[in-house]
Image (tube, rainbow, N blue to C red; front, top):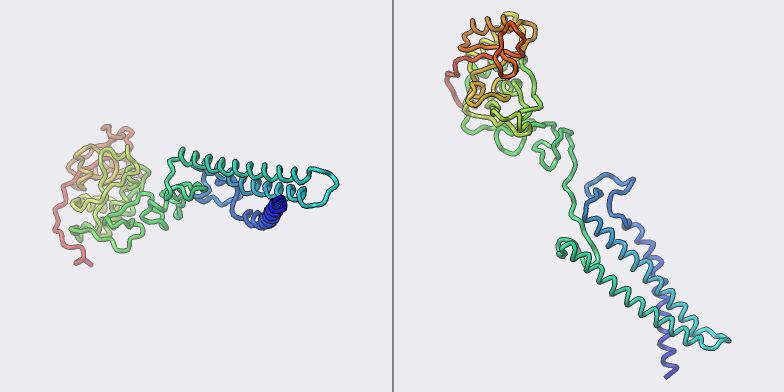
Length: 360
């Protein structure tokens, strides 16, 4: 009986030696799998999976548990089995070595059992705090954190690629005139259902586009230049709304029912040809009052660029404007004073419309 017990402990000791030997390459290979800290490491590429969030605290706790079990408890148990075996099988002049070895091995078995079940309990506790679901947090001994949204912005226009309708072409206004989820800036086939064109409107808009101001950082990021440029390319103009200044990132949608007054465009072209210097500041874009003639395509705001406001007032009235006034913001002021722009209203568009595809 005593010999069979001793044989059993010898077998257990040999198994411990094999376990300890196998642990060495296991630990070495595991070093390349990652680190205890799951995110925000210095020297790591700033990719979305390296950005820390609250879930990573639980992942860190889980990593520490796994580390203690794999790299401390298991090898320490193997070492204690080895020491116990040495006490039991090697010849010694001292009495009681065999019993001492048994106690060491027995204590080690009890200790590794407590550690193992403690590991399982703490793992279960962590998963319970997180609302564990197999398909959400991974296997029982792993915590997988959801990845944050990508932070890539390939064209540096302030819109993340995941939300950008032209990810490789800068277009902060995200305009999509034909609603096909491809922004105008990179859409090579803009088609507006039901939109019709007028040859004179297209030609005049192209002639005065160079007199206009560019896009703004308010009201959808569009300005008079966008209005004229779109019309000259057989596309409906962007039309803003009274509160657009309060929602600067909200697009000013293209409106296929709005056409620019050809009388207004012709007047601006003639004024430029006669040597008057001004900037077309607003047509269908910008914040204006509800029902403004700007939003129906027959009003314009001009800014000083060399010609005085009284001279611009006279020229606009002589060119057929039905209403002219100088303003500071939206407040009327004498043109001889210090206005920041001059507003003029013209007769509405009344030309013939045809399918845009039939025009050259």
